Length: 182
Ligand SMILES: Cc1cc2nc3c(=O)[nH]c(=O)nc-3n(C[C@H](O)[C@H](O)[C@H](O)COP(=O)(O)O)c2cc1C
Image (cartoon, rainbow, N blue to C red; front, side):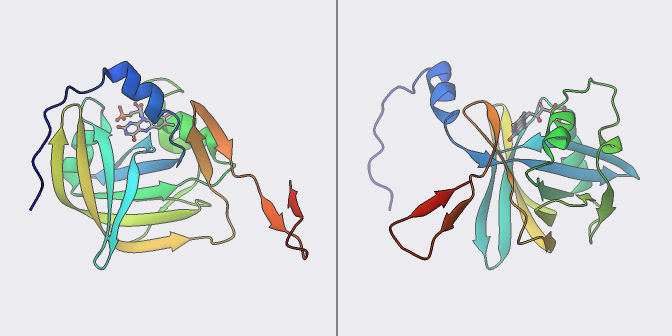
């Protein structure tokens, strides 16, 4: 049973935005396909939900173009970008202009659902759309994972504090007290 809910006012949105900007995430491109046409956007609001059954969630802005396409398609693929795929991230964030064909950047294939899968991505989660839940400007979409691909040795592109970032590689030396940073 949930405890008694406190009635406290929410923080102003700018305060929330400045704080959540510090939250570093891997960068994903969420894709879908409707009647042979491909759609996709860059997203960091992605999380694993559970492994049995394999399920993840993504939060997509309802005012964007791709949101309704995913809802109509009933499927989507979460492509976790490799660290050198920052150009793909920028294109799918709309930085090449409204009319650009986003899929001209990168090489695309499919797994099971037909949603586009990016070659060279660190991981891909091909999903059938499950439940969805609307929260103000965004919809939380749950995806039931029906196929995956991954490259274990591939580091991922990150985004946090308003910048694209790469993992700093840490090699533990033979001696426990010395760490070498690259
Ligand atoms: C680093 C980064 C992370 C983003 N994360 C999200 C996200 O989680 N959800 C979302 O709806 N939009 C996110 N966006 C914004 C969309 O990528 C952008 O608005 C895009 O143009 C939407 O495309 P659409 O109009 O085809 O839906 C992000 C953008 C960037 C640069």
